[in-house]
Image (cartoon, rainbow, N blue to C red; front, side, top):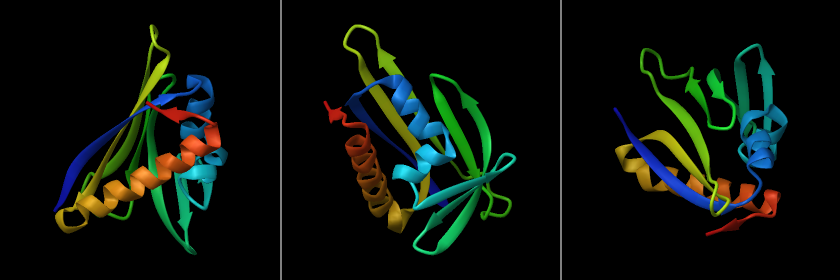
Length: 128
């Protein structure tokens, strides 16, 4: 049984540029995975020579994207990236929701933190 977790990052960046990096295969391939391919609504994420498939559940422009992992038979594990902008400060809140085994929870959070650091560098953004 996996445990759901959420982590949040506050960024100074353009929401439009961020959205491209979160919602397109080419954008995701720049920071999230080594390579991303898509066939219909099935995405293949490649890391270190292996791949995992996920079904694109939905994209809500200007708000969030959610994928369901296809390798977890009969279990509804997903990952979601939700983003919103504070119109007064222009700070973008990026909230990641994912699942991990209890023993791997801290490591999974660290993987996301490293990936988001790569995204920040790619965007030329800043953490706040």
